[in-house]
Length: 198
Figure 1 (cartoon, rainbow, N blue to C red):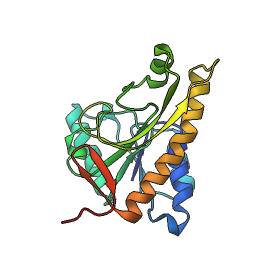
Figure 2: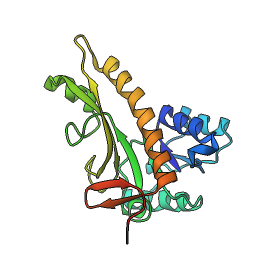
Figure 3: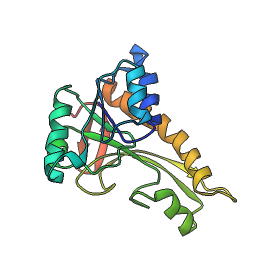
Figure 4: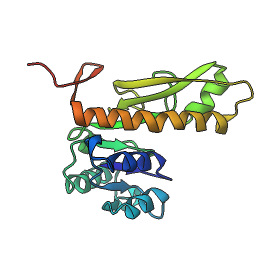
C-alpha cells in the first residue's frame, strides 16, 4: 500500500520494481490526500486501485486518520509506504501497520519539510537520504537505511534535491523489497532485515 500527495516518482519506482515477481512485493492500492495528482494517475495506468481521503472532509484530524485507516484496511496491506505523502499520520494508522517513509537528509539532521534547504543554509558538505519507520514524531522513527549525497559547489535546492531523489528512489525500492523477501524486525531504534529469533 502506497500513500502519495504529488507526482508519485517514488510510487513509480515501486510499481516498476513490483512488475518483476522476484521483487517479492506488490502495490495493492494507492491512497492520496487530494484529487487530480499525477501519483493517482500513475496508479490508474498500472491498474492499481486508488482512493482519496481528504483532511478537509473530516471534522478533526483524528477523524481523518480513522477514515484513512478504514480505507487502508480495505486492501489488507502488510506494509504502508509513505511516498511523498505530506500529512502526519496518527495512531489509527500507526498502531495497526508499519509505515515506511523517505526523508531527503541524514536523520536526525534536518527533519521536517525543508530538509534540503536547511542543509544548504547550514553549509554542510554532505547530506543524503534516510529510509525510516514512521512514529508519532516528525521524522523521528527508527532508521532502516541511509546513504550520503555530497553537496557540490554551486548547488541550489533544486539541483541537490534532484540528486537526493535519485538515491531516494533506489533506496526505497531496495528496502521495501528486502522487507518483503527477507522479513524484518525492530529492536528499539534498530531495524534489521531477517526474522526475529525467538
